[in-house]
Length: 292
Image (cartoon, rainbow, N blue to C red; front, side, top):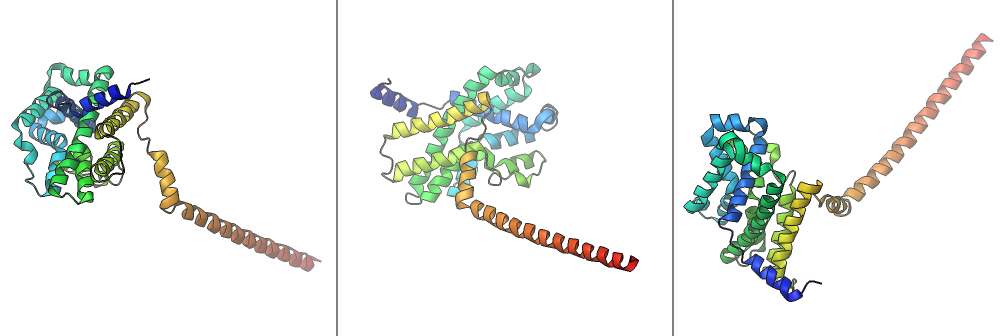
């Protein structure tokens, strides 16, 4: 059995984890991996031919949550670039991921044991960003729950919402890649986490200590990220989405309409076939009479 006091102490330690510099490095590495995978086999030629566009698109992914939060909260759009240390760190990681000799840094980051550690650290970082987004918005708009929720969401997965612009910088226009058209699992997870943090902060609905709530969301993020890497479980929300769509968004009624419409069509087609058959029989009888 796990000692409740020890578990609570562990949760408190997780909430106090400092993100700089190791978790920031993990975040930058995962962002660079995402850009390289999006570029595909042309990532190396593109980085050689368009280094400025490559750097700028990568920085947009790294600081996407900060850009969007600043835009929504009416703050300077370049607010994320105010921290020179963070920009220099992100640039150093970008350079290592794209220009290291023999591409050794990229190959190491793709090595599964190393990638598992980096991905887990990135999810801890994501939870921290969602929480910081909710807290920051609460200081500016204490009673606007929707603003708190949106800020936490974009801080947690800003890269998903800025993907269209980030690709446009690289010369690719994909308007159908808008995140709300086909939301990814990180977006759905950040929606859940942001709602929980808002409820925890603004209501008495969640009676558990804040440290346990925070630690639970960290475990949620890390568990499903590792499940994606190791077991291929990319979106555990799909069964719940299908059920929700069937119950609340017209799925049942559409199915009933198809069933009724299909039944009517079958009856109509059967009646038409019977009429055609009777006409054929009448024609054959008439022909026989003529022959007789």
